[in-house]
Length: 267
Ligand SMILES: Nc1nc(=O)c2c([nH]1)NC[C@@H]1CN(c3ccc(C(=O)N[C@@H](CCC(=O)O)C(=O)O)cc3)C=[N+]21
Image 1 (tube, rainbow, N blue to C red):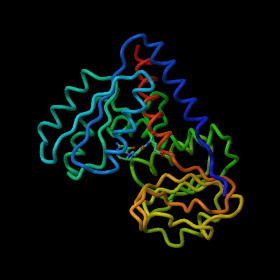
Image 2: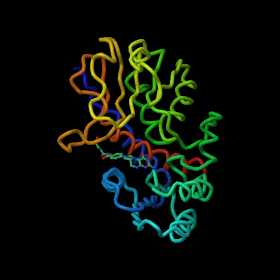
Image 3: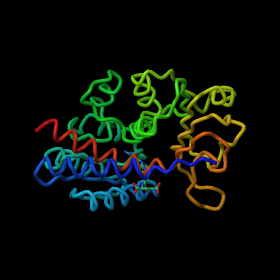
């Protein structure tokens, strides 16, 4: 069991955020937008608020009820003008509405890269893109802790994680394989990878049979286990070289860092 302590990276990101805010020399404000009462959204909302309080960022939190579609669209349009960054929690239950927002959110305020412009920039490996924060968190962990890896397997194909991460790791000269829920014999891929990134949302699904002693593993999954407790995809007892979990701690700070960097670049 070799669970990575990611405190140092978290603190490093915190310093970079505080420095950036100071350089900007003005109030920096983020807005979160939540629709409905999803538990994952609520925990992320709290995490953003707590981090902002520590990092000298003003945070406004907007909560709407499901069905308030016009109000949501109006809200995003207003926040485009008033805030440095907008984080709308995803997925929305209303897929059509979420699609609509992807075209309405201003690219320079879209700090979690949900909109079409930033997603296109990620695919094109543009320098000034915002990246989906979780995907960038994985890359930051791999780089900061010098994971000595060439072949990566990602078990996820979403727009929030798998697809952007695939492109970001290609840019880092990794050889990347994407597995997903319809992949046959996932173990045959993960066993042969240097690094496995998991995000399937099945508590403790990945045990030793998926890895070797030399595997690096980044566990992005969050779900409830049989006792109703929050759990990752990977059993924390696995015998691997390095297991990074608690990626959420890095995600929150990467999100805020991207916002500050974006504001500095535009200044
Ligand atoms: N557009 C969008 N992007 C997301 O990335 C996204 C989302 N919607 N909807 C909800 C899920 C859930 N999620 C969390 C991230 C951090 C914590 C969290 O609690 N972070 C703590 C640490 C938690 C820990 O101890 O591991 C912190 O930053 O201090 C929780 C949940 C992001 N998601």
